[in-house]
Length: 472
Image (tube, rainbow, N blue to C red; front, top):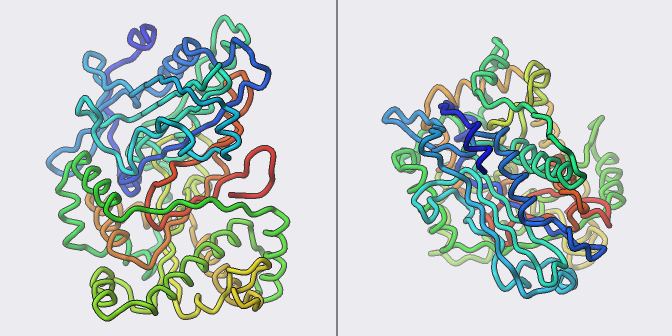
């Protein structure tokens, strides 16, 4: 840590709308590492810590403080004389790795929780909102290690998170192999880079995106008035009162290919990606369940539910698909890796009644009565996703950029829409993060997953573990 304290410089980083549009959420993952050969030199604590602070030299923004001024403009202030150092906790557990492995990495198998944050960023014990939280649990007999790491979306997105984690692992592996020095890697934090990468031509937002980014709401005004810490506390308490039930499903690439073939027979689409199929399938399954639940509601419950969704028609279901704008901005791809916020949600609206016509409960893509899945329904959903992806041009991204940066409180109104829409699902694809590439010198993780309870109506498409294929 001393080397980091010597090299860090005072600096202020101005944040933008892309940082705040998803700033209500954390990026938390838990990694399980196995000491396969019972090595006494398995991921030693001093090496992990040394590599951590060496990596922090390349990510100094993570030692800053989040500040919002009276005009709702946000900054990360790094003051070398008053740093907001990351939270770094080390624990030991009486549980052997084999027990966690036999429990299929169920977080409940650990006597202490690896996850030390909630779904939204809040102040830590010292009253500061930390921009990086780490909790390392060493398992009995040094049989394995559980590593939890979290960053708030205020400071980066999944690309930036994975860049830090892979770099930390890389630095530690170099130290493990006896490297005398570690070459310095450069990452871009200046948000002006993103401004310069935006094309001058700007496409107006379509009706769906205007509902997300341009509609002002009373709840949004209130949320924007709160400090990031207070807003996080409110969201965390809200999640406690509406607890989410987490589920993990696995689908093989063969099954995805079978679905893609069936969809192709029902659709004129020239290209159907795995992401199209998975996103459509998740939306259809959740939408069908929401439709079935609404049909069984009583009058009072139905009225209360309608009161929560004043911005959608009665028959509408909203799939908010998280997209990364980096591939759409060619100039940005040619520069030093930019690790600031570059994601946003693009809405896809569907008919609940139409979604209820697809069956997902059977063993072979059918309903509970054995009827086959109506592939035409899934084909319609895939077409909506593909249309959204193909329509996300650089000029359309520039239109979103204008909307979210013109009004610094835009993020709060978008959040208000998400909070007041019960029939929705937020879907993010995290298969490109390289979650299983984090080898600290003693082997890749055997299992990586988000916390068991994160956000309601939230789905992550994750890569399968190394000993299986497909997605989870």
